Length: 498
Ligand SMILES: [Zn+2]
Figure: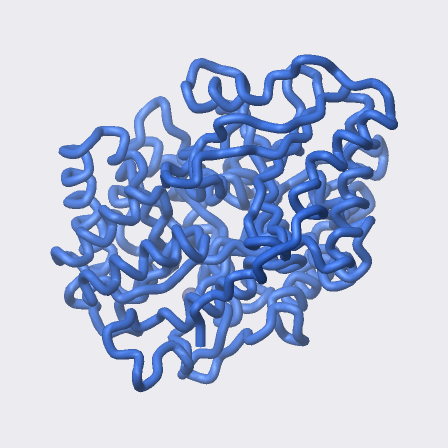
């Protein structure tokens, strides 16, 4: 979303991510079967946009909803994608996860995890364009299923490529067993994979139990490796339900715990922002910001646009106690920081083309139109799109992005493409990485500093020469896309699904 000053024309972009959104069909009758259908996710975005326009635009400010960075070029080149996502750009990305789905498990599934069918369903939606350009998928599990749940966790992250986990103690009947060994083990495994875990919460006793299980998981991880303890990321959904408990802020100051706000509205929003800044500052100390701990989410379809309009407009109003950076953290950056970029491991080498910054827009358009053509020929799909962030303390969403481009021919391999500017140069690269290991990139913060993984990435992408000739740039881009356009062979391996 862009806030544009009518006087000066100056604009400020706010990247908004909905960190709590359901996809599927619940046994309670709620559903969001198809994100593009009337009443679905994209329709929700459209309605949210038109409401916000009424609330936020005035004689001084205008609102604009446009896709971010390379998505703009990509959608300009591909009409079908553009039309499906048209009008939805008030929300840049939406984290989707299963309901208590009516199709989650069938007779004959004995020995399988309860939600395996739901997880496959989310995977099928989020891993193909144009849905993959907006949706980030999480899986759902019942940790009390022990080994079965751990196996499903690994399958959903490493095979399906989902990016986090939703747990619902009440709806899955384990409210009284949150602070238990299977849950601690589950959190430990999720941390090893680098993914966040969001818990539904009802009743403050659940929040206390989640905090206790999180502390136990942290201790366990720290014994293995201190850096693993930092990878533990627990999100408490619906913190608005617990505002009458002072201890909420003690729980949220835990180094591994964050709070998501869906369900909050009216006076609750005011109360949260009257208390959170100083209560969190007291317990977080000097070097952490209170606004790192609060995450925007909608819980669609359980809550509709009114809650989201109230919350977003409050964070951008005079009453909000923080800066616009604090608002940007809460509305999108905090959740992005918890979800690592989708690369199995650091790239070993890259095929790339380097151009002057001024030539980058043309090069991006060239790449976008070639990708669109390959898509229309049935040779390419995009299984994920994601952005990078600036290094702290500046909080902003960079134009740089990573796309996992999937060949539809050959063995259906996917290729990570990275498009970024570094040191004033434009880089478009196809990354080559070691497929045998799974060591996810921990952070999506990008910039040149001493942190070894980032140093390594910059070294891999460092240019030999800069290409100035347009024809040569085009040739190199064709070369980057060659593995998609060229090879023919085995049909794509089918996912073992229903
Ligand atoms: Zn929910």
